[in-house]
Image (cartoon, rainbow, N blue to C red; front, side, top):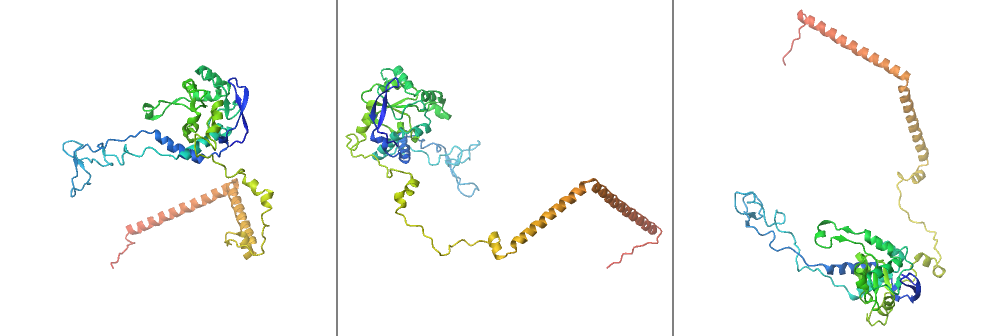
Length: 402
């Protein structure tokens, strides 16, 4: 939202040749919510009704087999001898079946939008085109443009060549180059149905009655759109519902804005521009101002105890220390024991990995193996003795029956 009193008027050679008062429409609040709502509904009015034939999916000779055959009751294709016979039909879950909730041509394709809402949206879009950060945020390259909104006294509508030279002179060269390199093929099957190529949006030239040939001169310039000041369209001022299009006004169109969006306008009768509910939206500055602080009461400081959340002493160390004064010392002792245990374990592991530790381990291993081998020899000798006694008949195991 801008509050500048005047705007410079530039010639086709990008020289200041005069100035014009800023129309009141550029001071309205920028309502992105209204623009989004109006644009989404207006864009639906370009759709063409389409749907499917009501007999698609039902062009079969099919009949349900009924109950008692351990199959679903869905209608099945008649006949025999082919894989198609007996297959389910008609249902949306079946192969070649009907579609669930198909589109109808009598669907509600278009939307009605209140006239006042559309006027508010157009006014917000006009106000946004005068804010350079919004214009740059939308993707336009306006670094070499002297001023926004840009007003040109003679757009050069006699020929396309003259108009292109004027656009290049006033600083639109970067934006036109951006449009030129953005041409790409549309993805998917839509390249066969609609425009095959996609192109970014460039500058919008708003002209008046004194420049009637602007539309003809600009129709062969890629990305450049034109619109008469009395037929401003939100779909052009905010393509995609995004505020901040790069708009170039002719001088007569810029002056006509005040007569169109005025309190006593004969074009839009009964329409009033929106007014901001706050002239200063900086709340911190308002609250901290002397006028507001002078009316506020002093901060209360009561002696009553402040209610606090009950804390768990098992998780809150401060509360546990208050309940058990030895808790801090106990934690320190536990930490000390854990540290000593860890250090002893580390020293033991280190000693085990040294040469003396490896020698001691080898001795233990040899002693264990010797004991194990001695046990095996003893078992073998005992078994041999038992076998000899049994062979001599001196050793007999009698099994007693229960």
